[in-house]
Structures are given as C-alpha cells and as structure tokens.
Length: 443
Image 1 (cartoon, rainbow, N blue to C red):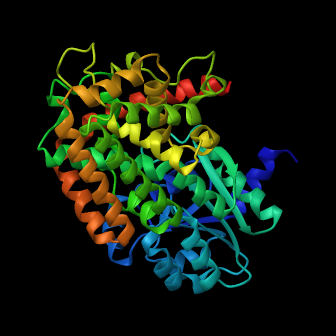
Image 2: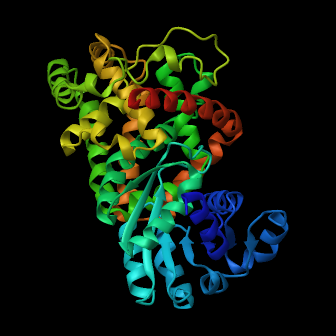
C-alpha cells in the first residue's frame, strides 16, 4: 500500500476537531477540509448562531461547543489564546474521546502542556503544534513545530500526514525547546515593532507621510509594524507574557535601547562605537556562510519598492536606526546568535534579521548610523519616544498585565487602522520577495 492509499484510509476514518475558530483556527479548519479530511469545529457557545450564518458554506461542520467536538474528534486542536488555555481545557478536557490525540496551537507550550496533563484523561495522547507565522501568510515553506509529548510513533505519523497538506517545513521539538527558540526569534522582534508603533502614535505621526522616513529599511519598519498592529493583540501578548524566556529578552531589549540612546545623547561616540563593534564581531563575523553566494538577505534597494509613501522612490534619509542597533545589542548580551534559529524563524524575524544584517555588514553603514546618532538631532525626538515605548512594553510584560497590554495595543491599532489594507497588501509582496531569497539561500 503506497502513502496516498494510506492517507486516503486515514481521511475516511479520522475526524479532526478544532476548538476555537479565530483566524488560525479557521485557517486549519479550511485547509484540512480542503485536503479531504472530515473536520468539525466550534467557538464560544454564545457565538454559535452568528458563526453558523457566517460559515454556512464552509466544508467543515460547525458544532455548538467544545464538549461535542471533544466527544467526536480523533485529533482535537485547541486554537485558543494562551492566557485562556487552562480554563478552556478544564471545561472541555473531560469530554475527550477515548484513545484520541489532543494538541494546541498556542505560542507558548509550557502552560498548554501543563493544562493537558492536568485535565485530560490518561489514555489521551498529546501531540501539539505551532505554525510559526500569522494567518495571512502562505503556509508553504513556513516552519511548523510538532511536539510529540505523550504519543506512539503511529499517532505521530498520523499527525504528520494530517499537516502535510499545509506544505510547511516540519520541525520536531520538545515543549521546552519550542518556548526557548520562539522567545529567541520572536520576543525581541515583536517588542521592537510594537515600540515603533507606539512611538509614532505618541508623536501623532504617520511615518509614510513624513519625508524623513524614506528608504527601503524604513519601508520594512513601517510595513511590519502596521502588519503586527493589524492582527489581534492576544497573538503577541500570549508569547510575551506566558513565556518566561521572553521576559528576560524583552527586558534586555528595553535596557539595550535605553543604554544606547543614553550614549547617543551624551555624545559618547567612542564608547558607542566600541560597544556596537563588539556586537558586530559576535553576531555577524561569520555572516557569509549563512548567505547565498555571499549575498545579503536584504538591502535597501530591494526594499525600496515596498513603500506606502506618496513621495517618489529613491534615496534614503540617514538614521541612527536605534531599533535595529538595540536588537543586535540584545542578542549580544543574551548570547544569542540569530542564525542558529533560522529553521524555526517567522517571516517577521527573517525581515528584522535581514535589515539588521544589512546595517552591520554593509561597509560604512554602521559607522554612518553611529555618526548620525551623535551629530544629527533630526531623529533624536523619535528615538526618545521609541526608548520610552520600549520601557513601557517591558513594564507591562514584566507585570503580566494582559488588560494593559490590550489597551495599549488597541489604542495604537486604532491610530493606524486606515492604512491596514494597503500595508498588508504591500507587506505580503515584501514577505514573498524575502521568502524567495531565503529559499535561494537554502538551495
């Protein structure tokens, strides 16, 4: 019997359940249904009638609640907010079908696995997963982490067959490894882009309407920051607040931002240069072995065309690039070499790594950033607001305050809301270009 015949038997026999039909839950339900699997799903019970109207034409079957999904499904995916995973598994876990498999899609696996061990019957197997990208990104070629926590090899092969329709790059990790790597690749990246958005909002500034925010690197900053704020707040709050590894990283990012900005306003050019060249030596000394034909992942010319601005393309405004300098400084102080995690990286991480690499490796560009930060005050106010924003996010995450995180996120989201459609369209084109370059490197 060949693999296609084996897969067809599994599809005829197995029922896939999705608890939580947010953006990622819907993505999974649709992709599995389209691939020929029998899929059932639910959201909050109070949403049942509304969802029934919205998704009446979908190939998957909508049920009223998680009890019904849990009783019928052979593989149950909890696609819910990380902060709510314990509560929801506590409610529905006892209804889990005998001998089934359960997994989750949260961004932090420690609380997820603890909830499964606490509330699921002992005869239930546990295989979790996490697609390392947002719901608007094409799943093809993206990292998909599979966590075989408590399961037979046969069950694990079944799950690998199921998710093969996503055409993702499957990576097998433990829950602990997953949380450490996602913190390394996402926590600081998100903090940087969140801080950019808050800084622009606090200055009542739409950067694409300001002539000084021109150039490819600025395009990347603007597009990715808007892309993050066009999503739901809990996607980022869950990783930052529930993952202990992320706390130290976000604290370090705030510390690096503050210390670098302090050197800038104190005109301590020698100290600033010495510090950043140590960072360059630690992170980027072997950058050529990570690049395809010694070519950088990104540069200003590639990113020039992805602009929201109405100003003519071409040229760039010299900038301190504090946000990029601080993320590299954070990696250095945390002992992280970002290239080590490229196999589990998100599209946002690859963009930020690409533009940071460009700043540090392009001859003369790092020196230009240092010189601008000391001698040119045009971005001084922007850098001050950015530093304050980075400190604010660090405090919110350190206190574990989901409500305050939501408030700050949504206030900034509302400020930028009119541009989300254009930003996502341009951002998708930019990400597509970057992923094509990544595949060139790997081939």
